[in-house]
Image (tube, rainbow, N blue to C red; front, side, top):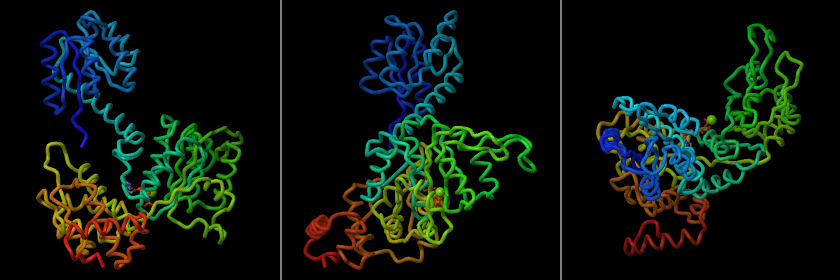
Amino acid sequence: MPSAPHIVIADDQDAVREICTSVATQLGYRSTGVASAREALQVSEQDPPDVLVCDVRLPDMGGVELLKRMKQAWPKLPVLLTTANGTVGMAVEAMKQGAADYLTKPFEVDELRLLLQACVRQAQLDREDRGLRLGSRGPFAAGSLIGNSPAMQRVFRLIGKVAQNRYSVLILGESGTGKEVVARALHYSGPERDRPFLAIDCGALAPTLVESELFGHVKGAFTGAERARTGLLEVADGGTVFLDEIGELPLDLQVKLLRALQEKEVRPVGGSRAIKVDVRIVAATNRDLQAGVANGTFRKDLFFRLNVVSIKLPPLRERVMDIPQLVAHFLERLTPPGVAPRYFSDEAMARMLSYDWPGNVRELENCVERTVALAPGPRLEANDLPSALQQIRPRAAATGAGVGDSSVRAMAEVEKDAILAALQRTNGDKLRAAELLGIGKTTIYRKLKEYAQAAGAHMAVGR
Ligand SMILES: Nc1ncnc2c1ncn2[C@@H]1O[C@H](COP(=O)(O)OP(=O)(O)OP(=O)(O)O)[C@@H](O)[C@H]1O
Ligand SMILES: [Mg+2]
């Protein structure tokens, strides 16, 4: 759980500091009040701020100067300046230097509250964005992409590498495995993250619409085209276009898309002028495109063009060890601040580890949402789960592993559950279980020995 946002308040007037501190506390933030710029820099070094509130006139340094110094260390830090009457000109100057907003003293508490909330929101957005790139547990751990399984760790490493260049990427995987989140991660962890990321679902739109969405159209190009429209490839110039369900793109549009990619230019429908574009293409499909190429429904040349790098997302049933962490992530997202966190009972978790998840992560997410919405207490029981999970018999091993009374569990336990669940799935075949988990066979033997020792002489899985 990230800790509460930290607000540093630099003002030499005690009363102002007190008001700011009490508003911050009411909003559930942490705050530190200081009377000088020097102290502000000191406390920030120890406990980096999410928002800085400072007076434009501090005893030892101007607020604008402090702002500049702080921004050197934290370029995106939202800074809220306060000014006494008569120094508004300075505040305006500060806005030009990158302050988020300013307040004229004496200010209304409500106004301060609103601005503070807006600044914190901005800081959180930036934090999520940074989390995506620099998350503590690998480049995508924080917030968005979850997965400790070796298979997902490999995917994260690949994203990290590929994001740095502009090659086309083809993302493959069953429905709900996270193709779109990966496409976003590719864009937002790359150098062009400030350029647009635009998605189009080639399967959901009529072919004529796909065409004008992608390439745009001129006024009067067809009945109903009362206004000209700029295509996605042009709007996303410099950024990324995500072509979802690329396997559904009709053959004639495949030709047009290939030409646009090769020539790096688009021609709006009904127009004659070509417009230069430079976009990165990330495409996704849950179909077997190679089979499409073989049977003539997908152009081979376009396939090669899109498939410069491919990222394959394994179905969730092949990375059971990610389930507890994903569940914890979804639970946390569903829990409003101040509400007791929900958790699944051992038996409920055992069922989730045993289920096949044909709808993959999306189905798991829906399952958690549904259960939270319908179950009364903080503890979510097996019979609160959707009916698909009622019918399966949980694996004894997974139940026995014990999920504990918290949604956050030690990694070792998660690992143990995953190993036991995999063994159950492979009917005790250790080599196949190791393969399923993407771990080495020596590792699985070693782990099993550890569990057996911990459990005493006989353990079911020790066969
Ligand atoms: N590794 C992950 N960590 C966190 N959330 C995930 C992960 N993978 C998928 N999700 C969540 O699961 C849901 C489905 O993901 P997404 O839409 O990316 O799947 P998809 O492969 O594009 O599915 P479809 O083929 O049905 O379009 C989303 O809500 C997404 O946020
Ligand atoms: Mg999708």
